[in-house]
Image (cartoon, rainbow over all chains, first blue to last red):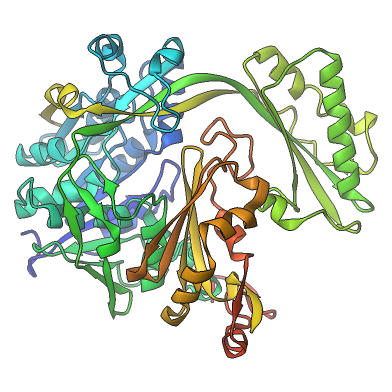
Length: 460
Length: 130
């Protein structure tokens, strides 16, 4: 065990790509931890990384991670903190190469080993897999992948803890993976430390729940928390979560002393429910966890104990995240003032629509929202009051025809001089055309992926 | 009996999975969980969101957390990078559900008044909240 009390402390340093850059630094500097997990991936993130790699073959991973390690690598080495991350995105090899360089520059050459996990990327094998009968049907619609095969940009299997456990066993200090599940970054180290057997369902399920609580960073320590949010202390230096796990799988969610935020039953419960499907079957590559068995107890200030977790046998499948080119979109905004702000905005949207129609452009969808009135709660709020002080008109369009979207971006500014009066807020220039990387979730049999997973460990 | 908005009885968090938004809603007080179970049926939640939810509403119970989890299918305009919605990832469907009204005994309504809302005289201070 790493700590004197027999627990293993896994700290969360990033909940998504773009999270608080100072948080992981505080995690390694402000108190004892054994592992730092950094989750950079979401459904949308893989698509963005894929776009970046298509423009630059050396890109496609979270560069933030490499910059972070340049700052914290020496401290991690000195304190013996091991780092586990899925920052590799769609290019873990490129990420690991950049990390070696950053490590040498930071003065840890010869003092640390990097573990690299590859094999989750199915892109080059896609046609072989389809030929072998893996249909990769869309989990939501049931449609076969062949419908969009030519548009596919990336395909990655969500992989579990096995390669992470293996890399730790081989002595890796920093482990870089591609599309590891978010939760495996936490329970992988626990399986390694405690030697939990692969069929120790309850303990691994407890580790999954520790991972689920950790994976969104401060969303369990007071960030985005609804309960008396205005009373949560020192949000400017919000403490990120740490799970202190015992060998029986029970654990305490906490944060470093002196950091901001709040860990309570309420803050932890909110995070448990985040992105939840059927709570009785939270499926991961290694176990199915039952969230209705979780017991929470507040055992001290900023300390919530989680216990009683039950799990059961894993499935025969892995989830696959596929990104495909799904057309183009853009969003433009203008701000209208009192009087009759909402009427002016709606009038402008009508004129814009008619101009695009007259130009012969076709869109798959045109969406008009009034920011300041209905862009969050839609039909729940009814029509806007006549005396609303201002609204921001927000129009979005989507089309398979790039030209149509391009033209839309040039039709927003003209409305300032050719549409309803008292309009402003157009100083940002023309909206940007964005390529849509659509998401296609599928399942694949484990034996089609697992033999292809490769773990390498090398010196910095 | 009185009708009050859920915001005074419960807190919530929402997120996305493809074109489905999930809303987890948690009773502040365990004593109010049964009335949420009784009144927040999938049918009523579907009716509440009206045209915002194109598909079905599914409900799951988590009595261990005094919580219900709703899946709102077809709520995110295609989801992910496809969606044109300001709230493409369903982050604020949570508070959308908290607008819903439930019927509670008078004394519950009285005790819950003001809960979940910022006091009128509150001002942010340097160093974070508080």
